[in-house]
Amino acid sequence: MADDAKLDPQDWQEIRAQGQRMLSDMFDYLEHIRERPVWQPIPQEVRDSFHETLPREAGDLAAVHQTFMQDILPFAIGNAHPGFMGWVHGGGTAVGMLAEMLAAGLNANLGGRDQIPVAVERQVLEWVRDLMGFPETAGGLFVTGTSMANLIGVLVARTAALGKAVRHEGLAASRLTAYTSSGAHGCIAQAMNVSGIGSDALRLIPMNEHFQMDVAALEAAIVADRERGFHPFLIVGVAGSVDVGAIDDLAALNCIARREGLWFHVDGAYGALAMLAPEIAPRLVGLANADSIAFDFHKWGQVPYDAGFIVVRDGMLQQDTFASPAAYLRRDTRGMAAGSPWPCDFGPDLSRGFRALKTWFTIKVYGAEQLGRMIVKTCALARYLKQCVENEPLLELLAPVSLNIVCFRYRSPDADRVNAAIVVALQESGIAAPSTTIINGQLAIRAAIVNHRTATCDIDALVRATIAFGQAEAS
Ligand SMILES: Cc1ncc(COP(=O)(O)O)c(C=O)c1O
Image (spheres, rainbow, N blue to C red):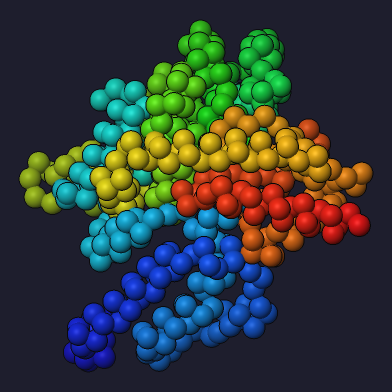
């Protein structure tokens, strides 16, 4: 056999030293992240450098690492930075980073089979069941993110409505309809689309003044659909809406779902983990009665990307939705093929990475209480920002602050243009990185305080720079 076909290092001492340098660089990055810009525009030559032809010859690890440090690391989106407040991105931790390295070293495939990495995932599922108030019979799974978790929720709800036969018979003329708030994330419509039910069958129910789904409008929509021969099957409640952080009246939605015989799924992408915070958890009353919950450990849980999760009250139904016997996936009571059911029986993926390890490390090292305190702190920072906005005549608040998201803007007769320009200027300055959204037809600067590193000085910097850029833009 040719020696040059081997992929292991020729010199383990050399790669060990190189690995220590790489690790050390990442610790430096995290330790001194505050000294960097949150984000910076990407030079054209750096973009161009990622169009090279397929490397044919072996390269040098140290040189590739050098390229990473020079051309990749400085031009990431910056969500590890305390000034990052755009969209809903977690900040990650050094602990999560180390765990991810261990997982990569182990290279476990968590589709199934008899191995302790699967037991680690089941351990996290047990914690999730406890946290969310779900029974022992609940099924659950790590997935990429809440978009995938919501899709699984819709698919299990589809099985609940039409029976297991839907998997081979398809939807035929089932006329299923689902209901969610008009403030719901676009991935719910995407899940309806991908599931074959179609996004036209998703009724977007208007919101009340608290940006929660209007419960009376929901009831009326279900009645109207039944009268027109549709088959209502699913209500999707939102725990922490993407625009403003609103929490639907989950208890009321659950009551309607039970009365009407509908599946009750909750998109708790980031909000569901507020169950870790005793001060906030009471606002999630009704969550424990859901049929399924989708959420992410990579948002408020600060686990490095990606670590989405789906938990389904009726684990058997989840299995009925996905399990697909195959000769090459035969189960046994002994040997490596033991341990059935396997994770691949609860979702669409067969090859699955060890997302559970970085989550298990995060929860073991920080503990639920510290994670809860961190979540409470981000909400306190959002209230601090709200206060700064209310105290500043040049700024105005555009939505109530329910959790950790603040939507505000610089006052101007040409506010949409000026505020869009302010956000770009903020991002390009590297001082702070909020994103934008539309609230009641008006463009808002949207600051989502998700990162555990964010402090009052970052909020002050955001407010100061918003005013400075606003004054410059309006003059
Ligand atoms: C409320 C809500 N639902 C769903 C999602 C999608 O989650 P993911 O990006 O993990 O797929 C998000 C993302 O921010 C969200 O805020």
